[in-house]
Image 1 (cartoon, rainbow, N blue to C red):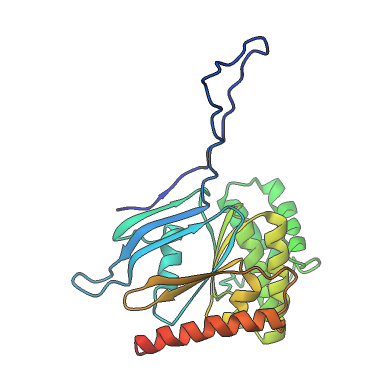
Image 2: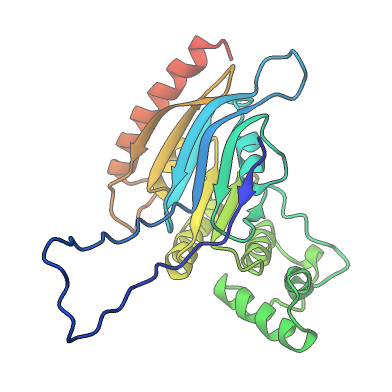
Length: 279
């Protein structure tokens, strides 16, 4: 079954003349429920005919504006699930619906074009979106400002630090103007201090832009610091085994006792899951 990506519908409101009284037996119609930003129903994935499934029976709902972190051992299918949500791969079975026109993607490697400037890399995404030449430069600079890269738009990739490159990659993802952002271990290659700064920046951008984010990571503390919900995936086949709602108020730090306590609980569950499947 193929995945579908549909535009979010607006809720209509019926009108009635002020002079016309409603029938007494007619109950008011309930408001239409808010549709999820991402809905994954019974998704399974095979890459080889007759081989073991990579994913099996995965159900996941991401609400509009929700920040969800996916955790699990290497090879459990986290990145595969992200690619399915992005529409890069079609599921073998099941159904995926995304309310955004097309989800934006951000990977571990920034994959910037070295012959373009920072602003030029962001403009490339704007051009692909159909933004006119006259508007692209201004919009690229606005997005670089949003990720705290004022004054760096004219620099080329080799002049930027690792953290700066990932900020450009984030600005390029935001240039796709999608309400859904998919992130596959985007900070894994960065040093601890730079990673912590970018955690704060991502949290700020998420709050300001009202994005729905699905964030893949191996770092349990990172997941607890960032997410509103942490989803643990099991292996062989990949499936969801447990979820945690994160009720710790923002701003959060990775050294926070509350973050550490919940991270320890999740880590214990992750270790048990890894032991069960011999990773």
